[in-house]
Length: 322
Image (cartoon, rainbow, N blue to C red; front, side, top):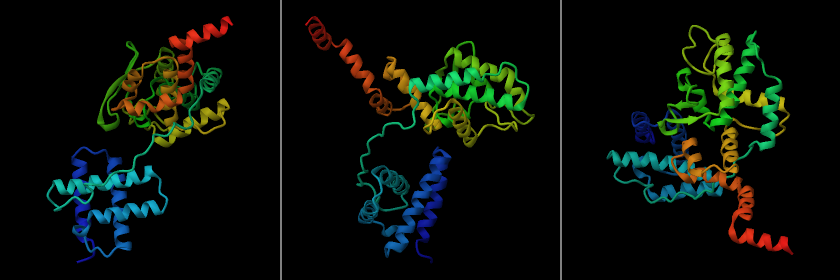
């Protein structure tokens, strides 16, 4: 029998188990990659013959290897989380006598400040550019693409939805009368309804009425955002769209699609939105996920504190009187 043969058999079992348990395809792929990375380490750095010989000490040695290679806390957290899921599932299914990862403590990771966001001034600059290049009457496929690009930007900035969520939108998900968009397959398979601003909704309606018919083919079905070939827009096209808009508006730093989500949340908090409302709108399961934006908004928070806190405002009045 080949070395680590049973390991490979159980990896195949885990792949099927994760799929039928509702794990998202991308999550399954990532977990399988990390399990494969661990397996290669077992084969090259240990004398372990198969998975039943993996002990808590083996996992500690693996973690130590990652630390020695100066892997970040986030990277170690990611890799060890995949192993905990893998070995935990095997143990619960009675395919292993012990779970070698049961007592593993994952490295704590701080949430980084979002990078590449647009300031409010930059956002106004982008909107001004889109206004000056707006197309009232769509005559060509190129015109249709530009109108589509405007609609995509407006949706991202107005709703803060994720990349996969906007790409999954269907025509029937837009409620023009109520100014709402239904997200049917958010993170973790959870759906939600989010509001969209009136001006952004106008841009979407213009795209659907005037531009989308130029892009649609008999096989386009009801996908909202289409490519020039009538196919449902993919991640690369959306990424290129945002880059093209930023370049046209003269934004010099790199703005990722996900940065539009950060931009939406931060600007709302800067203008006094309740953080729990922002949490609901973004589809965060935990408030702690939303609180990262309060760090970005700390300047606005300090300004508000000085202006409205009784002690601060009283001291300001005394200073002004002097």
